[in-house]
Length: 336
Image (tube, rainbow, N blue to C red; front, top):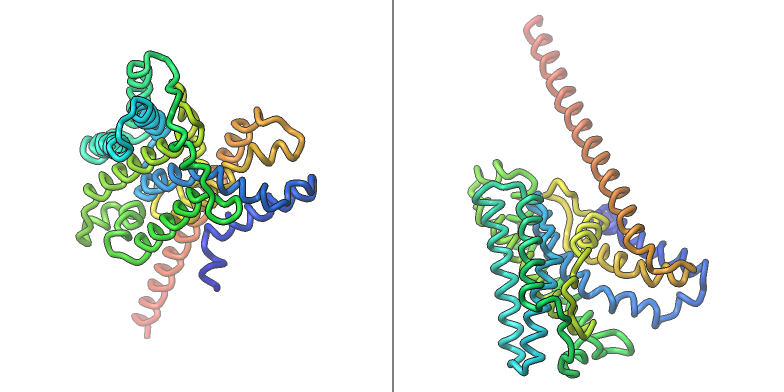
């Protein structure tokens, strides 16, 4: 129980409950089962893309191309389904595209040593351009009704099957990261890349794997996105990279790497997905969504930076105190 309470994601969970409670006090109509479940159902795309972003942040890097990755895969898969292509072929094609984008980012960041923000920003621009070339700027519409039903199908009451499957996958990923040797590599590399290499952890391969996983998650999110919306535009996925980063940081993942969990990123994703609905019940328009997301991101990042600085200062003082005590003991022993 103490471990749960001390976990960084636990505070995010409490923040989610407090947020729902405050909105419920302002507008009691919000606190209905359908509204609460709707917040969870609408968070599936955010949870998936944030889980992928979490892997990039775990290793101390970032991927701002996930929104373009999502949009491009959604465009390709949707156009294939619209043209009558087999579902399995379309889905596999989309996931392979996402993996290749992730591999390209991993190569640029881990092998070539280019700063992750710059390299993935370039990838973002390339993918956006390819979306326009692929579609000619036109929308991809008239998707099979069964594909759209994939997102709306429910399991228990109004709880969607999509959310249930996503939640189970997140729990499995969390257990793998926490309880397997290879799963712990991502946190170890983000915490201390040089130290991880010295103890035999393949830091280079781990960074590439993190970006490949991030790309695959963005691709899956793109497929779910197109199922949810029912059409894809040339600007689909815009802004999702910011929401993914905000969800991760809000979920207790440190931008410096080596700290956090996918459970935390998922809780943060639910918060980010709920903002539009919460604003409506508070009497505001959803146009404030991006502004509030930006404000939350700035506040959380500043708070995280202050916490990191305070932790580093405390560690420095402890080391200094230990050295001072050791020197005093040595002098005492010499005098005696």
